[in-house]
View 1 (cartoon, rainbow, N blue to C red):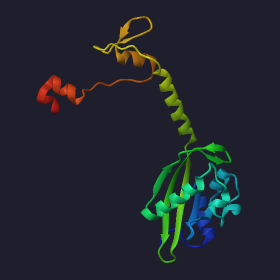
View 2: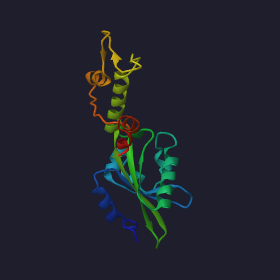
View 3: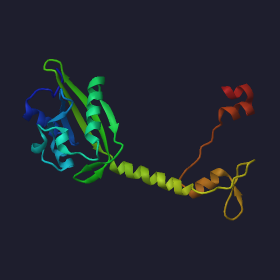
Length: 200
């Protein structure tokens, strides 16, 4: 028998409430719906709904956004139980929560009780919104820093700047960004310059 599959609700609630991140335990029902067995205080606060209003209800009752989220979660439950191991998901779209739209990373762990045939999944949510915002900022910054046409010599690969002087790619990029270069040699050049020694 796996841990957290019994029906001693108070003991299980104490355990999941001690976890600092939002946690839900849900049962995959024979009709394919997911019924919330336990939701901890962190998850109730995250979704802005008291735990007492969610426990015993299905995901369909939660009206999760964006549209299609409930069906996606059901498919994830099925995959987690089919594989019989913890799996992680980074959501493709932000989730509506009590704190506004948030990006989340979810770990689902199967809790299968062979004796009672319960098919329960523990879902742990990590809010990764700050990471997502930082990734988007860095992508935008890189796009802006390296946008437009850059005149480059077809032979030596030096770049012409706005003052019509020519500088190496390394110098051009390091003066305009925080990027730094380390030098190595690709396999083709190693072979060209060092012959068979380049293969080593």
